[in-house]
Length: 397
Image (cartoon, rainbow, N blue to C red; front, side, top):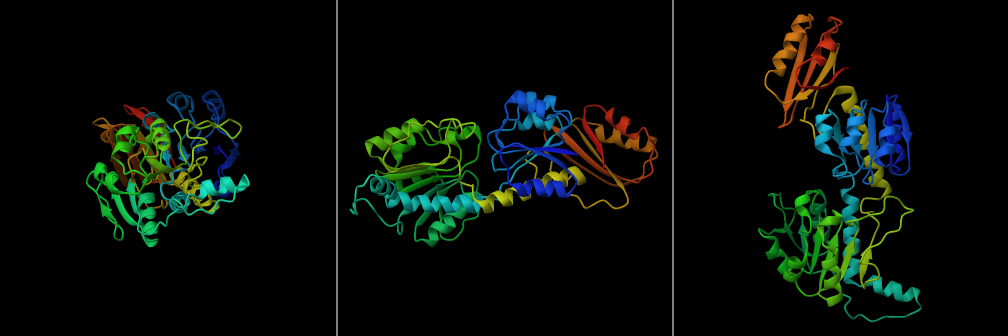
């Protein structure tokens, strides 16, 4: 079995795969669509981060591909529907870097409230500015969190420990941690908080979630942080509000357009503005987080390859299975149409197959059947299963 890992994924990911006998090729950067199509010939497992785009065209050409591991939180760089319809399971790391992102958020809040950025720039220029003007403590300030998921709730906990008054808004009811207060309407929260930090997912509906209208609602002197997705904040509107003094500090780790690799020049309308921190998408870039991600995603890829388990997949029906014992495991992915399971069972009967255990899960697009079979069965079984109506992919382990 071959795997291809791109974008300088942590070496532990390679080690985990190689320990299980996988042949691994690595590449430090991302690949273009044509390059990726060529590189995926004969590859069963693909590992990427945020700069490699796995398009429908790539998936249609990758005949040997079984699974994709996004060694990050987001999966918007993968055409999930096309992957689903080609029988390619996609996995990510939704929890592995939450602490790293939460910690940098807290660091940046302190940095911006104390206006350390401006003081540091002046010191490097030889200016000795000891003024306390506009430098404040975080204690007692109101923090508004948009998106109270894995990262947002961690930020809430750390911020409250520093004495901040925490409010949050999420479209889904979430369990409140500590003394944080849930707000039913985003506008109500924006009107009262001193600091806004955004932690939403890559849903296209979140495009320009923070724009001119939201800035108008916010208090004068607000501070804004975005470590979620680049398209969530209208950067032109943010620049306008920084220049007007409405926003007195901002930090962005993600941008609508980001360089494909480190040799490309980064350009943003927010460059060279006062009390603005711009970081190159490093919210989760700590040694601890990258190690955890490498280990977690590689283990999920191996688990899917060896057992068919899709419990943490972002696009497949979710099945968590016990390990096989003295049996072969059949995996059948098909379009979700009536009668497929009865056809499969008829094939089992025709090939003298004794079924030890059988599982079926569906979503709106596909069905996923896993059957543990006695090791004695007729040779035509595999070919017969491939002929089932609307079959996408068949494997026998």
